[in-house]
Length: 179
Image (tube, rainbow, N blue to C red):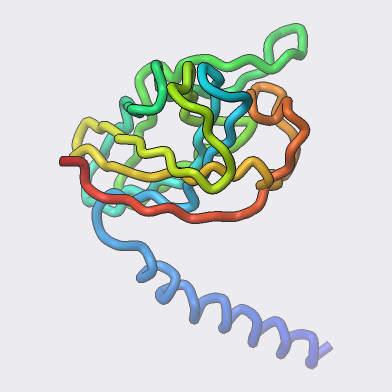
């Protein structure tokens, strides 16, 4: 029993010892990572963008919009189950409020950026530049890489790209302040 307690104590010390280092990996300000997109079809098709956003400021910010030059329409959406058990996509009214120090995940089956009316056919590995707009922070330009092979935790029927039968892999993208 003492050996088990000692192993547990070492494990706790290792986890607590790495927490400050992990926090230092995230820069000050608003930043986004783990950005990727899934698309279905060619020109005129739709897609979805997923990422994790961090508010490492000292004040509340609200992600309230998104623009994308490669889509006729881009918007913040969420997936929800209807009363009859079907998944549907709904606009995120009011945006996403991020308190200081908090993060929010845009993931399949939940919140996401919806791209409708793509102006060109996009394939795996291609870049999709987007601009995120905020109340309380400057606009942020991010780049999503199309990755239709990325595997989520499960399939989301509300995700238009999930209907094509692909699974998904892992990728990161670049971000820069919007001009």
